[in-house]
Image (cartoon, rainbow over all chains, first blue to last red; front, side, top):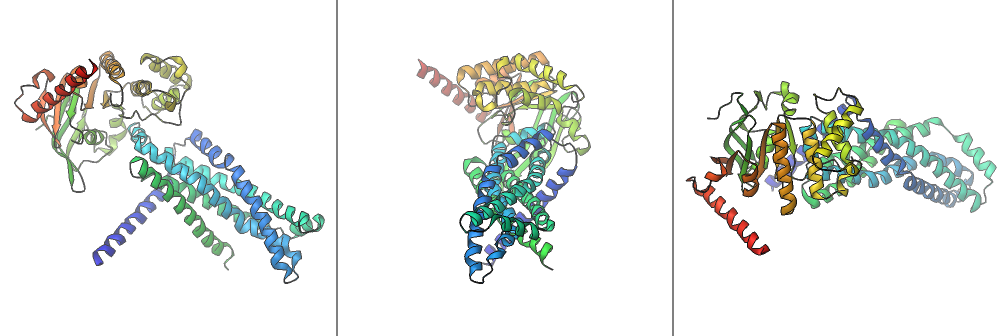
Length: 255
Length: 262
């Protein structure tokens, strides 16, 4: 029993150590040349542009559902007038970044792990090493840079669409006046709410690319190994997003 | 004891490599002379590919010494210079999926110390010339590796390997996954290329016919060490039981294949 416990403890410590070294190497490579701008651009398009539809759809439905829920809840306290501000704060601080992060994690973390895992299986990573190309610089750094840069933009779009979703439900289904809804939104708007969400988004981008690349790099060989790496990448990056969200919320608003 | 002077392009001296409890290379020694076409022959799982990765510095050896043109594999100060001596044709070709054929070759050239100062236009010209030299047509320049046949991918990978004009060309199972006709064409191409460039080559294979065709000298590996070195024509009666058995088994398979096609 003690032996089994010890074995798992050591394995966990080894994994934590490996992730830590990977993260440090990944960050180092983001700030040291050479920079593969073509790869960065390719991943910006892949993470940013191609994720726009799914992030937009998620945001509009979240905004609509939030407005509806708030209406149902707030009518109990005769506080229906607060819906616009709650939708604004809810979307910009929490739901916009978290839902966008989770959707992009599902889409991109798996793709990164699968792509790098397949490159490992087909010896493309070995080929990079024989060409004196640091695989961290060529594979990891462009994905991290692209994700960290594009996630805030995606979240900004999600914020706008989410707030619009709430607005649409409020004026069409809940009989709110569009003028007073917009006025209430504008009055309660605080730049820090949006900025804190964007900072969270950048951290989520790091989690998405970091875990995607890590699981691809350390995937077992064969189709099964790559499949397992893909699943682990999505699970790890989603947990990473939720944990980071809590930590950053505590850091930004805890006091 | 293997000679480690510079007349041997590659000198491998009593190297050991294990993975956990599995001892893969077990005191392996090998010398490859300058401009020699050397073939390493052995069964699947005997440590051929591990030897190649140790030679390239992808795997660290547990003990022993690998010296290539006077540079030790463990000399970190000359790591870039060491790696620039090689080009490798991987078993699965290892072309980058996200790049077209010409981009693959251009990328390889741009990493080379010899050519990275050239203009993009000049690099593209060299890449185009190398692709054409391995028998591929201009129309493949802008297609992706996944859109090509195995033989075409092998040629493209060879173009990338020779584009940097290395001192040593490494071929890992060059005909694996190819039909006998395409395999024969690729073998011819490899032999012609090595001859034309006048460089050292080291081929890893389990196929005796490939070894006979490409080799000036053959080394047979068994249980992680070289058990015999010499000319392929001497294999049959070399006095080593394993080598003779390997030779006989390979010929039985070849004759069976020929009889089946009849």
